[in-house]
Length: 150
Image 1 (cartoon, rainbow, N blue to C red):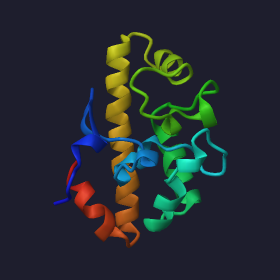
Image 2 (cartoon, helix red, strand yellow):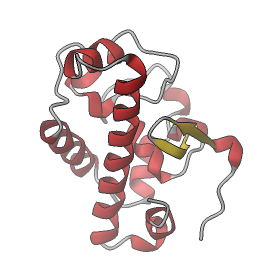
Image 3 (tube, rainbow, N blue to C red):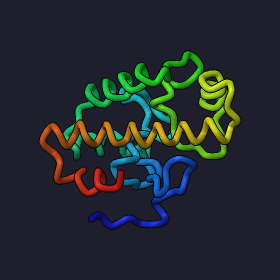
Image 4 (cartoon, one colour):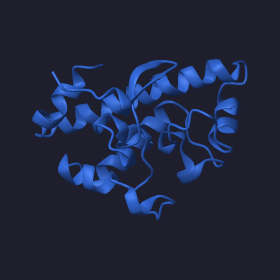
């Protein structure tokens, strides 16, 4: 079992005990909320995505492939969000001027509360896929305790 620090978790609709962002010292499940590697970031000075990927021995190319395959499987490609996919969107619970309209377009018959629940449920699925990939490729001792949380 892994130690979870309450200040580094959020109870979100669809994902209880979700990790905060990697740039805020989240556990590795937070990779689900990370941007696409290879781009400069607003908070690049404190971004730990690349460091986390390296530590988990997950190449940026594999990370991108996992996120983009997930995007295709879930109809999350979108021209209005950063990096062309909702899979790269962040946790921002209060709203995002790009993510939220993209989600509304994907789930037009849902209220904001309903589509945000779907969003966080799918981000949880994405986090699990990322960690399973890492585990299946030889670095399971670092991710196994977190896989037990799903």
